[in-house]
Image 1: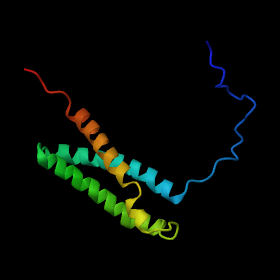
Image 2: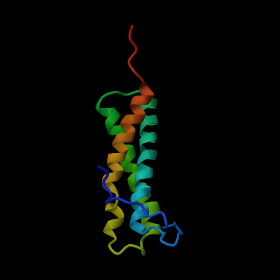
Image 3: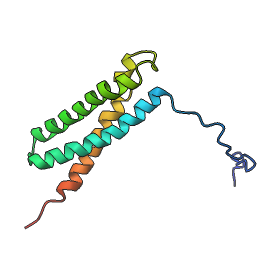
Image 4: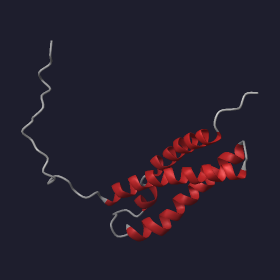
Amino acid sequence: MINNSLTFNRDLKHTGEDWRPLKPLAIIYWSRFALAIVAAAISTELTLALGERGINTFLNGLTVALLVYLITYYLIYKVKFKNKVEKQSKLMSQGIGIYFIAWVVFWVLMYTLAIGPPVSV
């Protein structure tokens, strides 16, 4: 039996009038996601260049992630969005979760792809 409760209205056309520019906090959120990918790439390159394994690998990567986060906060977000956000504490905290989760996911992915599978002898 087909469920007819879900129907599509073909008469509706997208006119573009309902598009609105992103709010400052949304811009901060999604740019932090993109910066996490950049930080993961830098962390991977640094780890491969130093050739370390173990806890130093993670600590070096985490240091890069923290530096990218703090530098972009002071150089970009605090300057550009200072007067556009109600609470100034939101500049630091907006997107912090997605930043570090995305950084870990992309760093592990890039690092795993870069070192490749172990060579069997």
